[in-house]
Image (cartoon, rainbow, N blue to C red; front, side, top):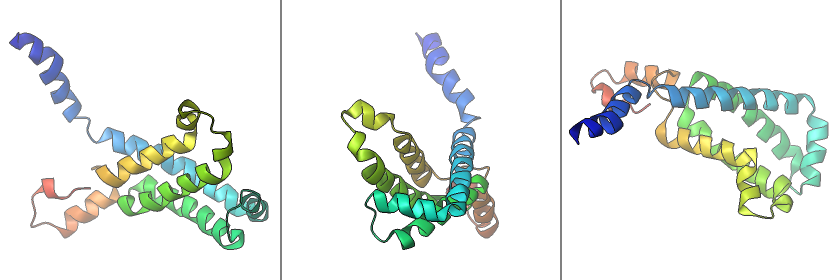
Length: 158
């Protein structure tokens, strides 16, 4: 019985312990890249995006469109390098909720449809980064490590 526990529980836990840095890095690369470029495109086609926001019923589209587009661009860049990750993830989650409520909610006819929207996937990834942090391969981690030399590495939290 101990051999089975070792094979099915201990060994995978030990192996994946060495790879704990990979999931936050992969998520940051995926969402950072996507939002960097979607934000860039929206900023370059701002008049059309303002009209889209107006059609979706988002209030003050002249103000919120450049703000959301800029947040996507800057937020994507910050996520790519892992800087201010936990802070940046929160407005990105809000942008996804607004996108769902304004542009997609009319298409929701079931839980399956709702969970199939990419905005839900992005929302969950941003939520993960907000809670778990950017991981050890990030500027956040290196900044905290440099500023908190008096604390043990487990307290860096990035």
